[in-house]
Length: 234
Image (cartoon, rainbow, N blue to C red):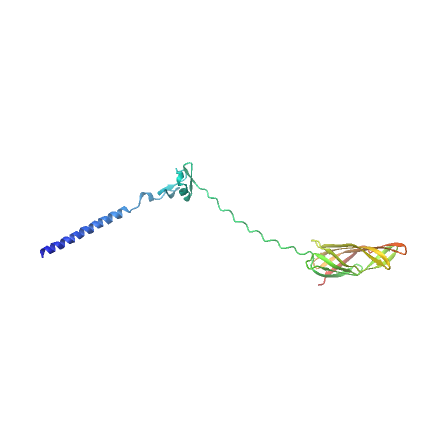
């Protein structure tokens, strides 16, 4: 019985020694894992970097090796003539400005529709403005009274189908020569009408001239400059 007890005690002591040894090794391991000297913070004005596998504190003017240019670049430095320089980073280009929207098309010089009015001789005048607002068409006049030389009076006119473009300022002019008859005598004439639009109204002048020969006498007739006004009716 006494030998068994001693053997038991020996085993306990052996275990205690082994545990103690392990504890000692563990303590040694812990002590070796403390902070290394090269991980300390860098002073103001420098930047911590890993260059060639080593921790460095980089600053402008410091000596450098050209083979580490790529590494220096990652930390905002470049190696020039063996010394570090801070890399200048160009700001991004400003965004391309959005082009302004296109200007709306200009309003037509006249409002489309049918216009009707009177002349200063109290005769009718009518015409149309095309759907695009840029042309006068379908001109129709009433009787145009004219005086002649030698003295005579001419009653007629009733011109129709005159057409003309409308300028950007709203003005237009119908001007043409024509042939006709006075009674049974052939005649030549010249008709001029000017006008200007303002909103749904138009104003202007007209003049008609006619020449013919009757029983051997040449006559020259004209209405003189007459005025007219018209308004859009539809």
